[in-house]
Image (cartoon, rainbow, N blue to C red):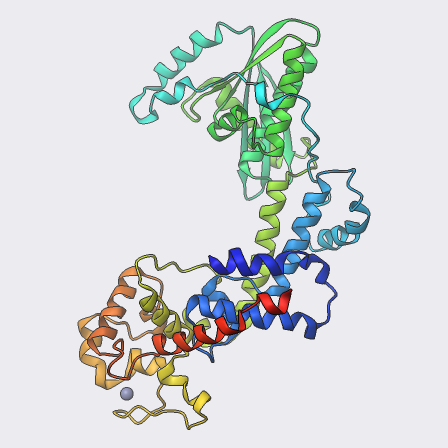
Amino acid sequence: MIYKALIRSKTDYGSILLKNAKTNHLNMIQTKLNTAIKLSIGGFKSSPIESIRNIANEIPPNLRREKLLLLYCARTKRNINNPAIKVINAYIQEAVKENIKINNILERKPYNFPPWNTTFNVNLFLTKFKKENTMPSIYKKMLNNKLQEYPNSVHTDASKTNDGVGLAMIINNLSIAYKLPPQASIFTAEAMAIYKAVKYLHTEYANHQTKCIILSDSLSNLIAITNTRNQTDITKLIQEETFIAENKNIHIHFVWIPGHIGIPGNEMADQEAHNAITSSLTATINSITFADAKNEIKLHSNNKWHSHWRKLSTKLNIIKNNINPWKNPELSRKEETIINRLRIGHTHLTHSYLMSKDDPPLCDSCNVLLTVNHIITECQKYSQYRNQYHISEQICQALGPNPQDVKNLILFLKKTELFSYSKDLMFGANKVLYKEKKRSTSDEIIGANLK
Ligand SMILES: [Zn+2]
């Protein structure tokens, strides 16, 4: 947390300009950051940096810079008048080649309505009735009473499958459907369906005073419409279109309805949205929101990191074949440090010889090379406790993320006194941490060199 807030934020600032910087210049920053990450997880001195980053869930610096650059490009694209667009176009084309489509980002213009005193008519009264306690016929009856107040109603729905994203609106028996790029989220698709419905009503009833109702089963979108302060780009479009319509006396109300309970309009919209995905006749709306672009960029960077991680052959690769964070919320700092060191496979007990320039240590009972794998899964000295605490003979399970396995491992380490400081068999957490802390405060880790 401290690392991310106080240290990484400083090196992130302006890092998008370092794309073509020399490696030795980048290393000047990176070595300091590496020390900080190692300290934050309590890693042993000799631990490979790739393993430390994996445990700390910290993406490699080149990928982080690339990610920040792509995010900057996507954010800049939201405003077509931004003069920086000329500069970033080359990067956007490069990204498109790698299949990250950030060239058609939905624009975000200044407000066309005063957000501080504008409210939208969103009715969530049906959410008071829980789906599990309410018969579909009761919902339908309440809804029919509501619908009688409105001469015009539109049902909207969206669908996202592995094949793509579709959305539809049903006006009486007329159906209008669209496709969205596959990276669009279900939130975006539902919002786009609502936006298209508002736009349709606005065009259809131009210059007629009328009352319309839009029915959607997307609660998150309807709640978003009530928020005029921090809305997403697509929600802002809905609000602006509704505001313009309102000024022309087309009063649009939004109502939440439960999905998949047999409300005819909703069922039809659902089916049409689903059909739109695979239909070659359906038009595609070829733009994505910034939020979706952000997710896509994150996914792209993580995929790159994941495939890079899979190619490595550290000790941690045997235990952890992915880059997902493993959380240990109930562990103390000391326990977490020890677990991290064991997973990385570098501890004071097994690797301090590298610092003292001695020979690698041997196990005094088995006379084989002393490694974490040997201690945890093989050493005959501990076989009784290994059985008592159900420590797996497979290192990937013994040091795996399962909370019960982690608890058992801590008990095993305590019982065998490998955890204890006094026996000098400790994995070196406190001793080394103390030394590292002293050194880093005197260097002031990062401030001095970066200024
Ligand atoms: Zn042994």
